[in-house]
Image 1 (tube, rainbow, N blue to C red):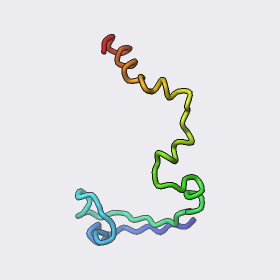
Image 2 (tube, helix red, strand yellow):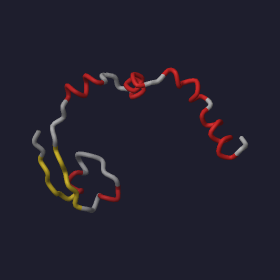
Image 3 (cartoon, rainbow, N blue to C red):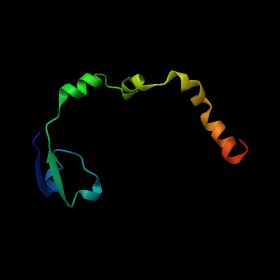
Amino acid sequence: MEAVRKIVDASLLASVISLPWKVKDLRVEVIVMPVNDTAESAHCSGVSLKGCLKAYANTALMEQEKHAWEEHAVEKYDTL
């Protein structure tokens, strides 16, 4: 995979991409790389990350996760 790197004034990019205000008057490095669409779409074709991450969910721990914050607060502070 070949990448193109170039240092430019951030003001030149304002019409192409939105940038944080902190870099608008600075010189920035732009790196252009091709995207491997097949690998990305094969893993998760949906728009929502919730759907993508569902494959990694551990259903055995879901019940424990419901009360994890309360249990941690009691453990750490001895009160809720």
